[in-house]
Image (cartoon, rainbow, N blue to C red; front, side, top):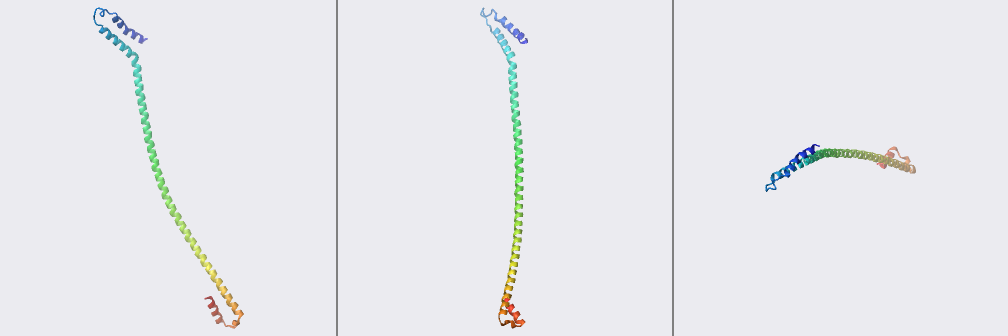
Length: 173
């Protein structure tokens, strides 16, 4: 209703000046046209100003919101980059620790295998010595057996003890 009364107030002078007699007598109608233009501009401003203002306010608000959203994304990207960098550094430290522990473990395994090999070599040497001892005993038994069989076969039974011991010693040596 208010818009209608403002419109009537603005249109009333236009109607009064439009019926002027100066144009018929050869005068100019510049002032009435100027007043009509001002009234027309005021009416346009009255009806269009608020929507235009609202449009530009909304537009600037939208741009500000988009800018803030972009800044938030930028902050999130920077934080993600820092987190990724921290994770990368942690992964590098973990990799170095794994490499170090693998080196230590390989040294321990090498030492353990070396000890096992030495122990096995010692066992083999002992077994070899025992086999040699067994072989030596078998040779002594075989030699003693041969000497005794020669003694029993021949005339050597009549030998004295010294000859018997010498004979055995010769065969054993």
